[in-house]
Amino acid sequence: MNPGRYVGRFAPSPTGLLHLGSLLTAVASFISARQHGGKWLVRMEDIDPPREAPGGASAILRALERYELHWDGPVIYQSTRVQTYRAAAERLLTEHRAYRCDCTRSKLRELSKGSPVPDRYPGICREKNLGAEQTAIRLRAPLEPIGFEDTVQGSCLCSIDAVTGDYIVFRRDGLPSYHLAVVIDDAWQGITDVVRGADLLDSTTLHIHLQHTLDLPTPRYSHLPVLVNAQGQKLSKQTGAAPVALEHVEEVAFDVLRYLDLEPPLDLHGAQPGELWSWAAQRWDISRLAGRQKVAEIHRNVAADSAID
Ligand code: GLU
Image (cartoon, rainbow, N blue to C red; front, side, top):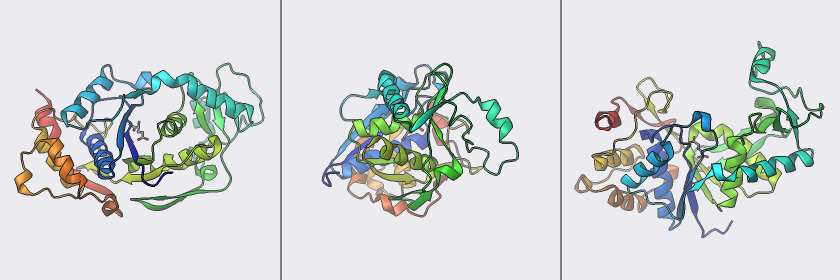
């Protein structure tokens, strides 16, 4: 990796509108890129149509624009790249690093009853040599644990074999796994720095394994502590997080910086988001968030009040 070059990205899945938690991730990756004089790319991870919200992708882009989070270059849509992901999965099969699997979710649920690691795939199809019909493609898990240094979370070490087992890179329904697509595109787009929520920390071990297997570079990782609601749950569509307001954006932007441990001076109160981001980029030090489980607890659904109109 060229030490002087910084390419960051924001990679939302258009399963819903941008909520405060995802805005915080977008801002943290944006100001990190700007702080390093680097590029900030947006990639739409639209590879799971059954989970996507109609119009979700364009609504997310509109919200980013409204918050003056201006991306560099064209937005990449993963739905246009499925052939590339498929070719990579096929290559893994040819090299015998992956195999086809016809286990259904319900069969695996039944088999894992009482297991101390119910999510670990027990390798049922490893030696079956199944055909393409109605099968997923699973990558063989490495026996040795994978370790990496996260800028925010510190040293991480995890055994894929013990926790996940052989994992899916291409699904039975013909769609690529998030893990395969994200790793291929981070490399293809030359991403040097991934800044995202700590809820994806466990996936990173799979991503690093995939990068090693596909001969791709490993970017630097920074997993941000998450925003939680009053019940201590991560803000997400599932926990009922409201879409971010598209009005009074300067107030929401001011709050986002405070959640990121930046205290903008009062004379910046009322400044437009772009001005706040420029101020923040000059002071930002992502490692200051180290050791924190969460960045803030949102008691009032700040975004909801003005979003519903
Ligand atoms: N698309 C993923 C999500 O919205 C994030 C992917 C990533 O940042 O690696 O949760």
